[in-house]
Length: 244
Figure 1 (tube, rainbow, N blue to C red):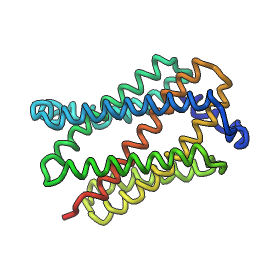
Figure 2 (cartoon, rainbow, N blue to C red):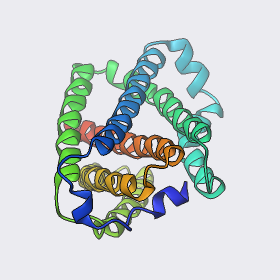
Figure 3 (tube, one colour):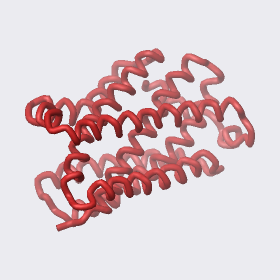
């Protein structure tokens, strides 16, 4: 997994901006298709869990709730250290495990918003806004001639700051800080969407047609964009939600 993330800077921008490349289009289509299926599975699981009291009680009323909450992060961290040269099958296990746990975890979000007036309308509105925003940013990242590599460090620093602020606000419970975190979260994951899309272009050229490596890159590329979408959605939903 780390090899996949480390080989994206070796291709000059000009070469990655070739106007027509059927192979690149097929590669990116594979990434987006896998991401879309992941989002569909997430939505189905979230709805089933969030609208079934028995599932809510079984999942979120004991220590197993921590598995759902922190499992995706644990999988990502462990795989990044352990999987130096992952196989397509191993990459798929990571992807679908993360997607499944996030989908189950988002059942709590469906449950919470189903219990407030127009809550599910807000969820639908946030999803549509996120889809339009994500699509526009990903398209820009794919087509821009500007090299976005330099923004990577800045975005990661922003992400770390976002995590720290979120942990602090778990204790402060400040509405003002929560609003600021949501604004910053939207900006950070908007930037990561464009950055990761361009990085995937560079990755495609760096792999030089290696089908095994491209299969792994497709899966991890879908995972990166999936995580960006989910986080962007949650922060946009937070901004749209009423504040008491």
